[in-house]
Structures are given as C-alpha cells and as structure tokens.
Amino acid sequence: MKQVVLIHGKDRTSRDLWYPWISSELAKRGVRCIIPDINHETVPKIREWLEAIDNLHPDKETILVGHSRGGMAILRWLETPGRAISKAILVATNSALIADDAGGDFYSGPFDFDTIRSNCQDFRLLHSEDDQWVPYQAALENAAGLNAKVLTYNDRGHFTRQQNGSPLTEFPDLLHEILN
Image 1 (cartoon, one colour):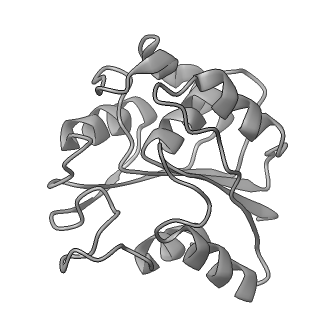
Image 2: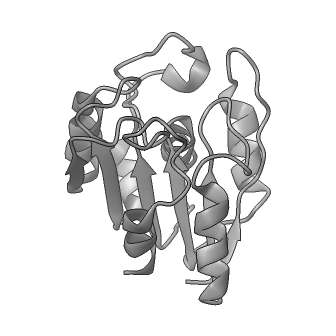
C-alpha cells in the first residue's frame, strides 16, 4: 500500500472524530494518509466529492476509506471504469436506495456494482446495528452488491460518539482493517 485516502462524512473535516488519529497511527507505520476537506453545503453535490478524490490520483496501491457520505462518494467514484484501487473500506455508508434527508445527487440511482467490483475486489464494510443516521439494511444492501462481508457492531452508532457520549477519537478496528 502506497497511501490511504480517507473521505470524511457530511458536515465533517479532516480534524474531526477519529480521522486525525487514523492518520497519525498510519504515519507511525510509514503509511501516508490523506484526508481532503470537502465543501460543506447543506445539500452536498457529488461532483465536488468526486473531484476531491480525482485530485488525489488513487491507484492500485491506494486504499480508500469512506465514512458515511464519504463511503458513498467512493462507491460513485468507482463506478467509472479504469479506476483500480487496492481496497475500499466503508464505515457507516448508506446505500443508493435509502435516501436520507440531505439527499442531493448522491442518490441518482442504484450503484453500478459490476463496474465498482471491476475496479476493486477487496471491500470491508463496518456498520453498527444501532446507527441512528444510516440503517443497518444499507450495509446489507451494499455488501450484497459488492460481494463483501459486513463487520457488524451493535453499540457504535454512526461511529461518531463513544458510549459515554464523548466524540469517538480513536478507531483501532478500522486501523486493523487498513493494515491487514
């Protein structure tokens, strides 16, 4: 692996949640981690998210990690033929069939799973059954289309808060999935 590109969720920045911790832990292991800050519009536009990924030039030595809306952006980016990457890890990522209240053009129809799988054969999905924003069913739909296994939790919510209510600032399970 040459680099990890982490695409944050809606209304987040590279400095939020567990993102800086992942970057720091990967740097300690000699792995470059890039977390672009993407525009925070009320209704996000997929074009801006796809351009942010394009500008980083992911390739066969890149792992793409997406949290929530960032995972959807990764799947939409992989719908274009010839965008081969090493691995994609999707954390609390919605399906294209279950629109949320922020909608936008992320929900322009079902994902083209055939093309997505032609660009990447190694997918990991991390999802909690108690996610308050993205239903667990979305993970099952994505897993079926990607031929991937879901790492299921029942107490992680949207991977933004610890059980005591404080922000989630470390994510060892994700680090393990990136490194293995």
